[in-house]
Amino acid sequence: MLFLNTVLLITISSLAHGYVPCISPASHVGSYIGRDQQCAALVQTNCHRPGNRPIGLTSTWKRDVYVKQNCKKIPRFTAIATFLGPNHQYDEPNLHQHTAIFVQCENAGIRVYDQWSGTPIGYRIIPWRGSSSQYSGDNYYTIA
Image (cartoon, rainbow, N blue to C red; front, side):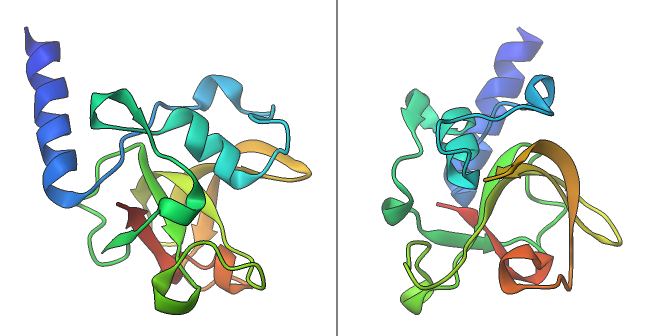
């Protein structure tokens, strides 16, 4: 019963704040998810909206809660992304974006699970002020 209450609480919290919950990819560290090995494949496979609905295509994603200012409120294993395009869009062909599974905030940056082409799933820190806009923790929001 405690598990059911916890799941219900997480689901209600997710609905109220627009958080998309994810399954931990810890058992897949060192391998890839998805044929194209892109960051979105990991999030699209492991993260589902309430009712087990898929998170959908990146073109449907909306920017929601700013991670840096809300670290303590964001549940572990929540889908996050940069929204660097016009009107805060994720899909923008001329921009490099990134998406990951949030674990927690640390002094150095955001602790995530992520992958990208050529780099398998890892448990990493995205520094607050990274070397590029897609790898800077200052630019991450939850996905609504």
